[in-house]
Length: 299
Image 1 (tube, helix red, strand yellow):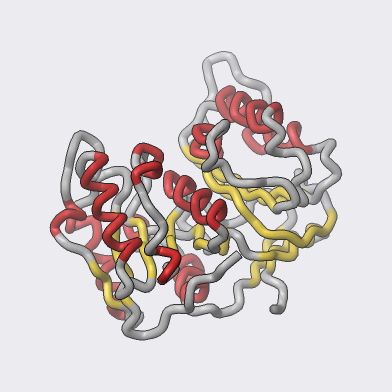
Image 2 (spheres, helix red, strand yellow):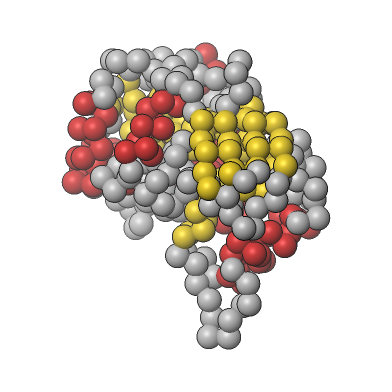
């Protein structure tokens, strides 16, 4: 995978919203944070467009993102928030000029669509927090984003979960939000998972639907041949009046327990305040023992 160039003081970061609309007030804290860290946020009034729940209609959102993908002056593209809508514009985008000046694409949740596209084209991208969350994020979360952008080492060690499956793996890491991955099944945008470490997270889903989506991924062969599984936040899960009978973690474990791979639960990434950066498309070493570790190997 090709890694875009590391950022430094004075690097320009374009702010886009390819899905749900966002206000200037929502962004005030994060824009100042980026400036304080030495970066130059780039945006214009188009960022604050509103069309229903979207940040402007599909044509506008695609046009804004395209202009920054093409620009040789932009060093990174930071998605302001998720929601829903990126899949509506992904097929409108061209990456020909992007290839002349690759840029870091940053975000999570609905931005899983862009991550998948980046990996299909052979580029690394950063699964990390977004400006809508900066005010509530932990210091470790924000620091990990800056470290990823500036090519500092990313090493995470977390407490063991009783559901973990011990083992080791080394491979590129791909994935993202389960619901968004599910929505891309059968399309050319779905990331290649064979021989990879798969990362999953989700928010605000019914347990039966987590089960449905995991079965769909499994039946489509997307869990076959993976080297390891890292599960981040499974936040605000819902149950029906008649309980499903399993937690979200147990539902996921059931689908991979016989795959002969290490599995790490409770990784600090996803729809949680402590949302640590992961560089998708990069080779990671995964070790699950008494503690669960995920780290970038020395290059």
